[in-house]
Image (cartoon, rainbow, N blue to C red; front, side):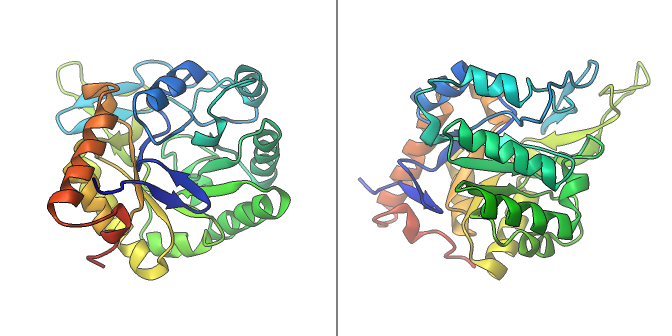
Length: 298
């Protein structure tokens, strides 16, 4: 059977389907379950310097083409995170998502992650609904460049930069992040939901992030544009629910994909189903390995 292994920077994955940050990754146990269920790797919930409660409910609203969410980056804080993951057996296949309001916070978090014996971080430069962090930081090209340079210079971590689609020029943003080992494209799209009978907003925070099948064309466009200009390693994310979706991302330059919202529809068997579909596609189309189709349409 055709090989579906892939390589992001210096990290080799047995398969290209990764658990995305923010879905079924609140605990070390849920991360481990995804890895045992067939995910090639997993990304943790975004972790900050201090424990954060997040927003009041409602924080999630299901719509016909996906989800709206404004959880508010609730997380246990780096101290509690490090304590929980002591002795965790799958640190090499786990990417720790971190967020901060400035370069110093990102660097401090990265050093704590490295000290806890993880070797990869995903920089949340793209959360669309929390002031002072996420996309507000991620749209500052100089700060993005500085954050990545400082982490690369001060640690031995592999750095994945998760970029926001809520900009006019994602390629310029990617070029500011060019010292990262990989790009993760994309995070959720800034959005609002309305309940017409209660005449209230669907989310307590009013503005949230839109994820699910409806954003796939936006994500594909970002992957295509960035791969065309940079030829760097890309992890595609946004609306992936089937193996066919994953193939579309590979053809446009992604070397791996992340699955998030789709887990709420199908649960843990989705990893094996997508991986089997990818392998069967490569076999039927006479490709020996996944790398043979990466970027062939660009």
